[in-house]
Image 1 (cartoon, rainbow, N blue to C red):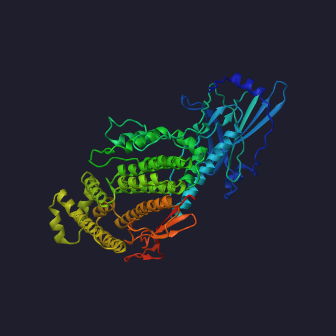
Image 2 (cartoon, helix red, strand yellow):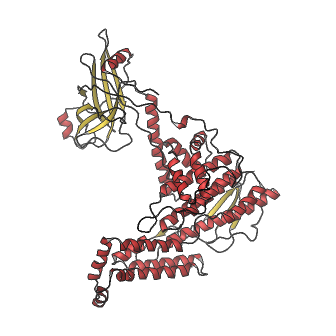
Image 3 (cartoon, rainbow, N blue to C red):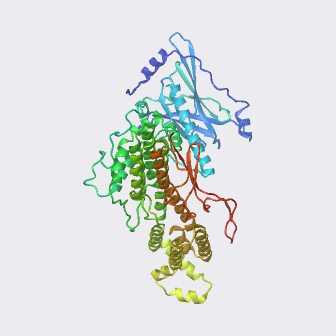
Length: 619
């Protein structure tokens, strides 16, 4: 790696040695005077660049100088910077160099507030290949965002993959010198309208350029796996002998996880949806080995305490990091099974389940995150089963593991109770909310109620506020534990929830406790049942795979005694397909079924949605 430290004399000497060709520049739509352009209110109005001044910032970590721009007006759709340089060689021959730099392609922000800067380096040749990589990086990240938006609109799983944004490549600028080098700068917008060129006349006497760093994406991905001589519980990892809190290792795993580039992120998204892992994914996994080791070791520790705030509530658990870690583990499993390492692939999937268990049910937000991570684990195991060859021993082992390796907590009750406790504690320590309670009391229409509540202490008044919600939760828990069918439970919970919200519509504190204590209980209950259906379907599928491994064919009918569909309380509907088999729920998923909102009435169900799970069988 080379750091260039150039003096003015060396810049000129280097410049005079270049063989400059006239490059084809984008056509400019400069028509009419500046005054006319300022008056033109149409989309073809061109930007007005008043001044371009190079400035030295004097910061060691800054990769060059700064070109300060003054653009007139609120021209917010700037797209790029155009640099035109004229050189006179020793024989007096004039050479011209034109270069375009789309510096605002990845941002809607433009220098429209009077002053802004563009990072510049002093002259070398423009790296066209690097700029093409940058433009491709912008494109694939935009495509990734669009794909997730389409998936969300279609109701499919959305994978918000954090990607490493490629830094904008260098913008090269020559040092102006009298009678030798002249430098002109203009800006152009997304429609191609270009400002008048402004000549740079200020001369700097210091500059440096950025070191070139090789990225890990150029490395080989052949040794991405930790080792294939792998037996569950015996593979080497970070020793947990002196660590009794899994969260400590998870936090280290978060810090060690490298962010993928935009192109890798797009491929990750496709692989998580079932595409074949390529060398790009394996190269990324190679650099995630320490992250994977730490996560595996953490999964073997029983206790996991993420840290508590001074208020006695769960501190800020990085939910995005938890999801990203589950993505890495799922990618690892998918790469392993693609290379024929079946049991390690399943083991990596089970680590995701253990991560979901460790996320826990400290509050509703974490509980929902745990369920999402557990769903990722189940989808990963489902993918592995569809790719691996028939292996009765591995399937027997997996059946046992699914029975003992628990994922997200099964009950919603504890999460709701914990969230209520946290919400009440926050009210106690929040002066603004306490003031709202006093204000609410003063505006109560019922004089008798006002008289009863006027002499209460803050704590007594708080008890009055949250007592209705405590009663509501107790009734909800009784309904969930009852023998009622899923649909009756869901509709009754929804009815009670709507009534509670209506009764507390004018009570801001009660609304706060309801919202942060775990609102939308019916929806959360629906998610819980859906995840239970997926888990039961996977367990039932393993038994079907076992029959296929032992007999060489799928059963004609669903075997007896398998886990049931929690929506209907009956056996799953079983159907053999060309690619494998399907397990289908026999009762509709009310939470997933499209509905029409009706004020003051239960939502109208527009169509029925039955959950089904497709399992492929390798022939």
